[in-house]
Length: 237
Image (cartoon, rainbow, N blue to C red; front, side):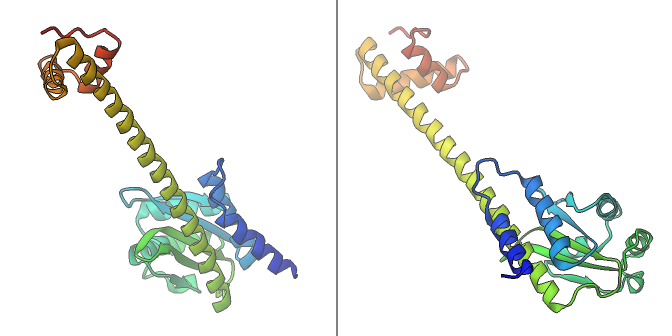
């Protein structure tokens, strides 16, 4: 196996592994930026991810110069990554000297930083776009068609990994919420039984008493139920 093939295999394995307990998103994205530079032969890479409101944030860059350039895009609301994210399509600029009309501020800043080409690729799964990957070259046309395909494949694998991790987190939250609800229901049912026995009423009537007490005292039903069980709440006939 050639060194390139071995590097590709290792990279895709690392980018696909989001199931580890100590998964760290920043470390994951730093790895993506670093691997893009090494595998694609570009000078630098940067990543912007969208938050829950769809606002892009700079989350990773292969070097400080690129980090500042990505922040420059965000501050000035101008640049290939923003267009890529908004349009959900690759934005290819093999020669920055021809981009002065599209991004006058960004192209000037990028050229001053020593870059001559930039490629922005969407981090997208079907209709969901979560960010954009930008690749910078110090010469025009620094990526060919095969390079762009590989870059998009890296972005796609990373996107799937991030969305998978988010799905797991949501599932854990849902599971925890469900367990909390079940625990609450058990407490309330126990309190209903205790009240029914103490007041010599039916279980249904006990729940009515429990609810009325909670409302009249401006308390949560669960808190009152817990108080009935541990005898800190005394509801008399």
